[in-house]
Structure formats: structure tokens, C-alpha cells
Length: 269
Image: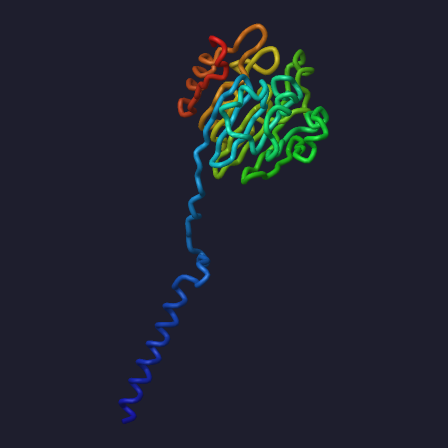
């Protein structure tokens, strides 16, 4: 009888041990990965970004249910077919970026307005509860979008008075895994050239206020966005050659997509 009992005990012991070993290699109950296990991150939600050029620097973005106005000028009439803004970004104090009359005409009751301090100083106090003041290097999250304030300024001695360092903001918008960069009024500054992982870049080029097509293209080739949108290219007296900019970019890196939208619907260029 003893000879029968001993094998049974051994078999049961092996069975229990095997079960224990199996439970160690199985998934945790809380779904956390085991040590050393390579688990890919969950896919991030993606919403289409609709880009609506209005004129010059003025842009409307639609991202899911969120509507963003960048440098809204021109009065409420030019926005009559657009959704009401949830987020407004203003880059600088000049009239082609900040227009108080337009802000007052628009329905901004539910909007947050991100601005540099110099712009905040020029906006009526009734808007103060809506303002997020960002200095160069600051960031703020609103409506699921993290906005980074990037320097924008001139490098050429003869142009430094137009845009001094620290006064205005370029912006990076982080929407899901996508990063959009609006240059504002700037030249090809080191802070632009050192940007990383930009999906869509909106780049100015107009003399005498910002930079040449060559400078803009050279900067783009350095930070390598996936797509670049030339905007803000009407100067005085000349209009920048966007086709020339495209040729320079694609000659240097044909993998960068240069997308030309109609930023001047009332003009022939």
C-alpha cells in the first residue's frame, strides 16, 4: 500500500508545482507587464487636423471638436463660416497678428487666449480672465492640447527693431502625437533650427520683416519637419517666391513635403 501512496504523493506534488510555475509566467491580474517583457504602448488616439488658411498669418485649425484660431484679424466677417474658437493664439503686437477689434467682434465667450506679455498689455481688461500669458519657453495645456511658446525674433541688424527677442511667441501645438509649429514673425533663429519631431511647420518669409526664401529653406532643412506650409509671405514691396522656397527645400531633402495653400484669397499671388 505504501508503494502506491508514494507515487501518488509525488504526482500530486509535481502537479501543484507545475501549476505554481505556470501562474508565475502568466499575465498579472492588473495587466501590468512582467519584468523584461516588451509590451508596445497602446495606440494613441488620432483626430484629423483640418487646416483653414484665412489670410497672411491668420489660420483656423479644427481638431475633433476643438477649434483653434491663430492670429485672428480681419473682423468677424472673415470668420462667419468658421466654428467658434475654443483656443486663440496670438504671436505678436503688430496689426497683422493682434487686432483687438476682431477679438471684440468674435464670440470668444468659451475661449482661452494664449499670448505673450506684450500682447496681454494691449488687450482690454475684460479679456483678462480668458488670458494665459506665456513667455518664451513656457507651456500650457488647454482642451487636451499642450502649447509651447517658442522664441521669434530678427537676426539681421537692420531688422532687429521689427521683432526683438522675448517680445513675441512662435508656438508648438501638441495634438495627440502630432506637433504643429507656427513660426510667427522670425528669422532662421537657433531655436527654430533645433526643433525636434515637427509634423507640420508653418514658416514665414517676407522682407524686410522676417527672412528670405533661402534662409527659411535652410532652417527647414535643418529641423526637418514632415510637412512645411509657407505662410506670411507678403512683404513690402515684394511678395516672396514660394515656388523658389519649395525648390530649395526639395532639392535639399525631397522627403519634406512642401504644401502651398491659398493664404491670399483676395490677391493674384
